[in-house]
Length: 513
Image (cartoon, rainbow, N blue to C red):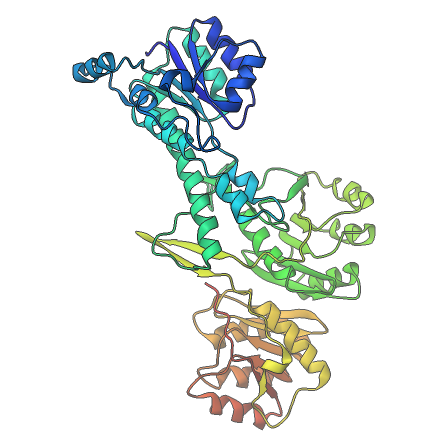
């Protein structure tokens, strides 16, 4: 244990600081403090010594320089049981610190404000604070460092029992380094963004734990959910849970996939997801109609699925949603009557996600691999009719064009190899995650059955052979949309012409692994 005789306190977040300082003072601890923290303690009647009294040097440069002084940092870094360190402290008349309570300038809060200027952001980059925290954390064998008000009670309790345990000092030191690392990562991210660099030579990212999860994909895997420091609206990370049991690892993954899909559409849309693939997508004149289309796309797979809607859920839609077992319903908002109806399902999770207009597909996407990570920009590419070319003799009709562009938005979100059949702004067949394209097509066609007649087909990547077109023709598909670009494109074009099928090339692929 280490007894506490002298403390250095300098905090931006002053939550609980007066109570802590008062109790420390009552225990005979000498308190040294700076600037606004010192004034708050003085106003509260806590005996406190100003940093300038310790250093013999005034705070200068609008407070930019106040603690960066040997009388502060020697008091933090001296190893107590090294005689030469003790001797040098005596020679320089420097008193060591046993406790450091510091948290940093509110950089995160500053850059989250609308219209914040670069100058405001720069002024909220703390220099002295991280230096004190790192020094104290490095020397945690002798110094207790606290960066989180949530730890005040723990530290006080141990001081009352005679001193802070070494295990506690170790945990607090690790937390302190996480604190400064996250702080620096956020600053680096902000400044890198200001320069426009997308893939810098070093990339440090930080997340904040939102919740501990019961397990990961399987019960034997531990897991937690982390959110970005500044997450945008319309995301799972910022969603408000209105009802239901705690989200699981798989719930969060599926919910995110559903939101990404439904945000593709401007018209009322509903997406049903199982295992991160759509099992039903519908667009209609209203939400209730869109849901019916999504449901009828695959009434079997939707059972136990995740549903995302891009409009406020009304009573009529809620009544339909209530009729089957669902894991999660996500929407920008819910009418009160809709919430009341859906809450009758005890375990159904309701998530209000807010504004979806900005979409959730942007940013940098990270995938871990053994010994490293892959980072890429989100797939936000959309294709307009004007960007497409018609490869076949027959051009699509206006109705076919509408269905082709609808199917293209859906297939973008299906695991590769991916095939989607659609008609009347709803999916009728989805083939996902197959090792060859014709296999994905056969699954989608089998699921569609008779509904495949008169449908359109979308493929996430080009056709390496004409076999997919042959299967589509046999199913009654009338138009196809695909990226094009195979050395054997002409074989597929000729096969489509033979059956009177229109084929459109987007010149963009959407691999999704």
